[in-house]
Figure 1: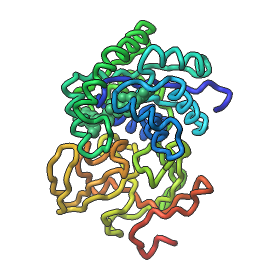
Figure 2 (figure 1 turned 180 degrees about the horizontal axis):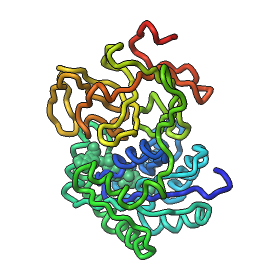
Figure 3 (figure 1 turned 180 degrees about the vertical axis):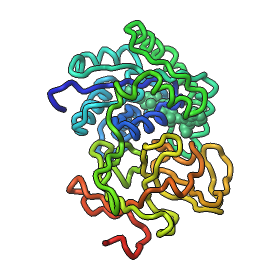
Figure 4 (figure 1 turned 90 degrees about the horizontal axis):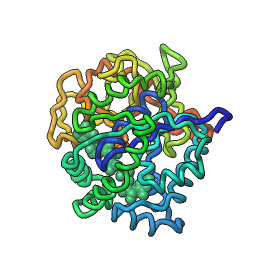
Length: 343
Ligand SMILES: Nc1ncnc2c1ncn2[C@@H]1O[C@H](COP(=O)(O)OP(=O)(O)OP(=O)(O)O)[C@@H](O)[C@H]1O
Ligand SMILES: O=c1ccn([C@@H]2O[C@H](COP(=O)(O)O)[C@@H](O)[C@H]2O)c(=O)[nH]1
């Protein structure tokens, strides 16, 4: 961390309200570091040598709250390790004890800018988690755990949101509806300029190739594997007609919803192919002149599952190699060699 105070935005709401989904978008667009307290706990518990794994897993399955010292330590470590200054802290603080623990260990060393409150009705939250549970592998995306998680949310987290509200920190977002409508709400709150000041994909060069900074977790584990140090990648630009896109290619593209916003995704289906949309739970035939793109990290990616097939013309280049940080230099991102990749 630098001498200026890091900025923190807390992100709260019921289980499955869409916090992670929107945080991924915000991180991708504005370069904020998305730290999900739940993800950090799951990562810690998955370490074979973790002395806390059993305790954390018990809490997660029961929807109860892990002792604040553990969660705070993980959050603080992740913030320090990132070297960045703007953080979305997703799913924390969850109860009064979390608030007190955070004040004691972090307190005034950070600037809490606001609390994004994803307000979503219980039925929608439960339905989304159960749907997610079909593929998430989470031990708590099931009816028994969800009942307990909802009780914890109502009894412990709602009062924390009310507390922040008294301090005028809460920005309420109607989280029951369309993903894009909700993203528009962040802009309405003026977060665009005031809070999320960094572009997610900074293009340094143009014409033949660009070097781009990848923000966000949507292509984990291939890109930004730790979520803390961002990768710089070489993007080969091409005249779209000169290169035949192939399934599996990692490409940069302009967002179909927000002009001038760029993202990196993998091509999952080409024109005339059929793809299964795991969110809408239906098969889609990709129309002529379009492709279907997804992030490798389904949980943290905003992609064709949300905005549908994209015209090929929005694809601006193909990712070739990681060039920074040094220890990741040369990580190959191409599955299919093309004649001019090494030019
Ligand atoms: N607006 C939406 N409409 C429909 N489905 C959505 C919407 N937002 C998110 N989802 C889906 O609902 C599920 C839960 O979303 P997400 O993981 O973002 O919630 P969360 O608030 O981070 O949950 P948790 O706190 O349990 O980790 C995901 O499968 C996601 O794809
Ligand atoms: O600050 C926190 C965050 C999470 N937990 C535990 O993890 C699960 C899952 O959290 P998600 O935000 O849904 O990923 C939660 O039910 C808690 O058991 C926590 O204890 N403290």
